[in-house]
Length: 95
Image (cartoon, rainbow, N blue to C red):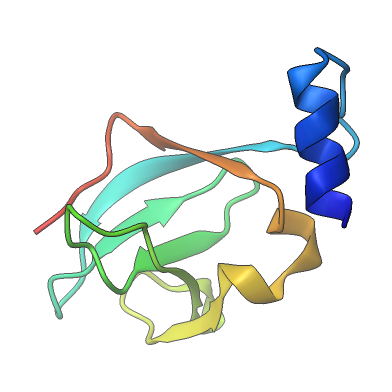
């Protein structure tokens, strides 16, 4: 229901900045499993665990917020990022 309301507001040109945020992910490189690693503006490390070009990014935090840490919690489990628009800087690294 809430998504439908947001879509209707977007179509009407209404601002809904309280629900949608922009998350900038700066590319850092690839870990030892060849997964792309990114850092957001708050210093949180994110890993794309399914970096295929034809799929949506499957972003997870990293254990202990380390570049070489194992993937941990998926972004979809954080309410904060539920409506986030992801911007990859300079671009998303895919296989």
